[in-house]
Figure 1 (spheres, one colour):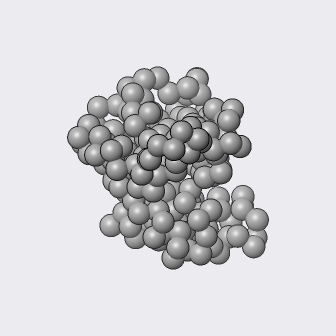
Figure 2 (cartoon, one colour; figure 1 turned 90 degrees about the vertical axis):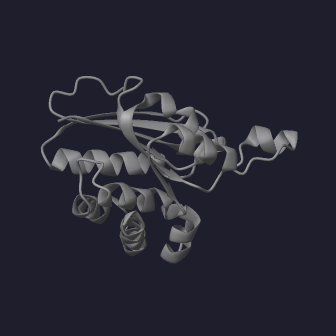
Length: 194
């Protein structure tokens, strides 16, 4: 069975690396994989969206609206913005920490993500809200939110890749000095899924 996973966040959160870890893990299992990213304004805190499709006979990298089995959201507003991609009964895993967009900062308006989380609670039947700040604090760096969320997803069994699959990819794809910290983040994410 094919699986569609949409990852979304803002620049600097590691969305692209997370999507590559999923893709490589799926390829190592013999699955067909297609991916694509939208990263235009990522360097300025803009939206980053990555589509990962895996299974058999995958021909297009883009997930059609209403077809994502999983949305892995690194930020609440990005989860809401990408909700049209979610299929009925699909899963949303979202980091509850909001990242204030540049437009809100410039205009002086407030944004803390609470309204977005409330909206998700009202509109998503299978929702997992993760305290990414706590997980990253325990892991030793805010830069491992991507791997912590992968840990939640893998332990929740909503992807076609396991925790062990992601661990193997981290060993191969992450610089050696960062492997231990990422492994800890993955483990903490898995524990948070329980």
